[in-house]
Image (cartoon, rainbow, N blue to C red; front, side):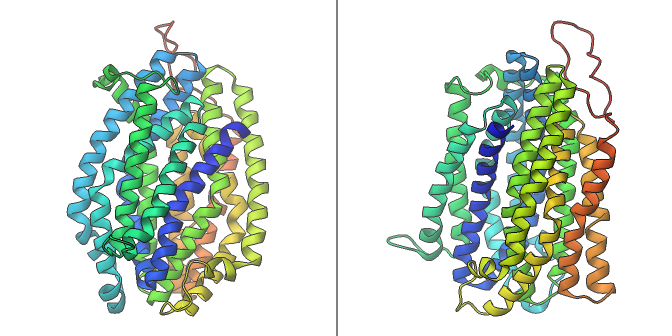
Amino acid sequence: MFKLAWPIVVIQLLQVAYNVTDTFWLGQLSADAVGAMSLAFPLIFLLISVAGGFTTAGSILVAQYTGAESERSAGAVAGQTLSFVTLLALGLSALGYLLTRDLLSLLPSQAETTARVVPLAADYMEVFFLGLPFLFGFFVFSALMRGYGDTKTPMRVMLFSVALNVVLDPVLIFGWGPFEAYGIVGAALATIISRGAASALGLYVLFFTTAGPNVSAADLLPDLDTVWEIVRIGTPSALEQSTSALAMITLTAMVVTFAPPVVAAYGLGNRLVSLVFLPAMGLGRATNTMVGQNLGAGKESRAESAVWLAAKTAAGVMVVVAVVAAAFPDPIVGVFIGPDTPGADETVRLGSEYLRIRALEFAFIGITQVLLGAYRGAGNTKTALAFSLVALWIGRVPTVYYLAFVANWGATGVWVGMALGNVVGAIAAGLWFTRGTWKKRVIEDESDPTPTPGAAPEE
């Protein structure tokens, strides 16, 4: 599990490095630019999540076929996932570009925010959506390699991509050297170029090296049975990610009714929480692979042992992270806001309060991510969807609304409500996990035309 998890943690750390780098340089540009990122990210994530669920399905199937020592099926699933998600990405790219300004207009906001922040968010999103297909190549590559059990190769590719983004961000935002200053659009261009390079390297690894599942050009041709399996397993994951994005949009719609410093603090705080989220996410995805491969090999007890080990480790690590975040919020937040930036002091104060309150839920984040990873690895994507809905749409969204607007806690109500979601989700998912009904695989034994006992409907 450690061998699987640490490269995943590094990958996720590098993933957040994209956002943190953008936030850092845009924070030197203006607090409004940081606020624009706060508005843009949930809307971008909404469309990305639609295709992201199907990369999860590919990872699950590759893991279980690999555990069952069915290399040919693993390669076929990988090829079908790649072609299917690529087509989705092209459609979503066009849809996102055309709907950007309409989506932003749906968000209620103060006149000041509408005039200063929304136009910047629109400029960023339009460029980002045009480059969306360049992002998905790496997403698919990373998921397929993770299911196969190789997490180091995607880590190396991601490291190159992030290094490229770090170089390009200030150059394109501020116009260093011979390059024009593009402002917030420069951040989008830097992300697209660096992600595109990662996608190209990932495709090279899949098709021209011996690393990962054995994929050939013939595997890209549509196979309706395999596509249906990807859709069947991936749709709940796509819904899970989409409803998460909708929850983020709903929360953002509430937050933008506050003054710009609150919007900026919310966006900055979320970026920082996503950074400390990494150990839990890494262990959750390692659990996904461990459960998938062990169930594929018929080792149910070993799969369960992996989940318990991961949950304990995740909770312990996140407690340590929580102590650091609660003890030193001001210097952590202050790094990302330039001292001469308008509204800097208020943004740092609010962001520090947000980080300190969210630290109370960190251990529960770890447990939730591991348990959801276990359900996904078993192919029980409907179960993972259900508990994500519990965490977001019972534990978080209504709580934020009540505390911020009914109880009149204001911005503090937003911070407290955000912290309750994973507490509720972890308790609910943990109680269900003890039933043991999740230990069923979804693949069939190719040597036997009859379904395996594990190929039963999801619990």
